[in-house]
Amino acid sequence: MRELHLEPRPTLLLRPDDVLHDDAKPLQANVLHKAFRGAEFLYTLELQSGSRILSLVPSHHNHAVGTSIGIRLEVDHSSRFRVRNGERRKQFNRRLRSQSILESAERG
Image (cartoon, rainbow, N blue to C red; front, side, top):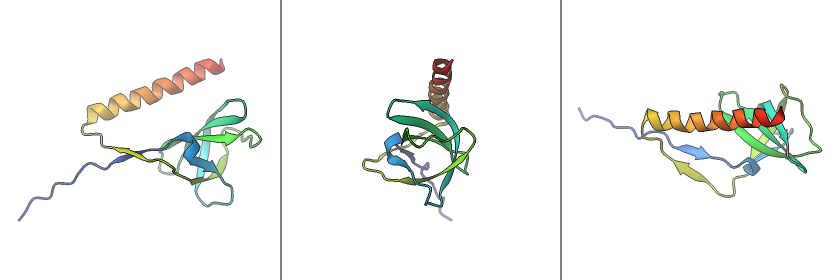
């Protein structure tokens, strides 16, 4: 019997401006954090899968942390990459956590 070697699943990098607020869509995400950026809010959203994504939303859509919003993807440019070992994934996740900690510190 031949051994099957599966490639690691690729990771898709989504830009915050590719994740659009759209309450008419069935895909829902929970607002974990929001940061005011002038004309927009930068939302940290959690999907039902537990994955976290960022979304830039016009500031007149002011949703409270803990609420769910509808979203849709409009990906103009996609970037895929493979994380070949667990250590690289840990480093990537560490950088994401560090960014989140810095944003929290900025809020005071």
